[in-house]
Image (tube, rainbow, N blue to C red):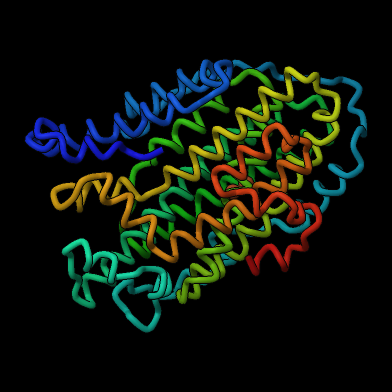
Length: 394
Ligand SMILES: [Fe+2]
Ligand SMILES: [Fe+2]
């Protein structure tokens, strides 16, 4: 959902102080996105998180409290109730790695070295900027690439913190005991991911961006939902599925060996996390009533759209480009960047088939995915049918 053209041309908006204008443009975009939600029940569920994330911008405060409403499930019979989850737990224990000693942290990283690009130079189309009246020197282009790579990795880091908390909640809330064992390994995995992304950003890139308002909204929504399956759906299928595609895209395009190895290891872990989500949800979702399925289908679709339309590097825009162009113009430029377009494609190549695998792509909702250009991914193999090597290859 884009900002209407009249906002750009509105003389009152154009005369506003810069900080106020950027805020107004963002609000208009957010209001349009919220009004586009068709299922009123889903809108009611998303609205409090959208208010906190998009309008109050609570993610930018540095710290946040999210009120958990789920119940912790205890079972004093300690059953072996899911052999596949138990096997995943054994695999996860075997494949643990140490973020401080298993990565080549001694590698020196220089974002301004053109021979070792953080993201491939073809990621950006500088002609698009030129047509918008902006030119960059070679060094400025490297600076821009450094910032975009830092922005992406910052969002990965914030998403990993969300995954750390969600994995802990899921471990408490799941009624399967083998799921609790497996979930505990995921908590450890996510702590390691937070550790390595944070260290890479701090020591190597020396730059970190705030959490994107949309990502905050999604994390807030699944953390505060009391239903355990919504946590699995939100984190293990949607956010993790998206991350899996995003990590693979960045790994393929980076020329920086430490980042490449860091992402390769994280992808292996993430593939397990998504498989866990599939194992937990597929049997439960086969038993849903029509009303329950509709709500989950529509909620998943809205979260997908929120992620698809809104990851447009706005935090960087607000810092460096808001005085040069409107938010609408920025969105138009960023959408034309070949690397970011490829980024969005790969993200949904992993995520959409998993929604089919858990039964949330009935014909009623398929046409919505086709309408927003994601129909091409529906029939691809789901994550449980893909090897780890294919997953890393992207
Ligand atoms: Fe992770
Ligand atoms: Fe994960």
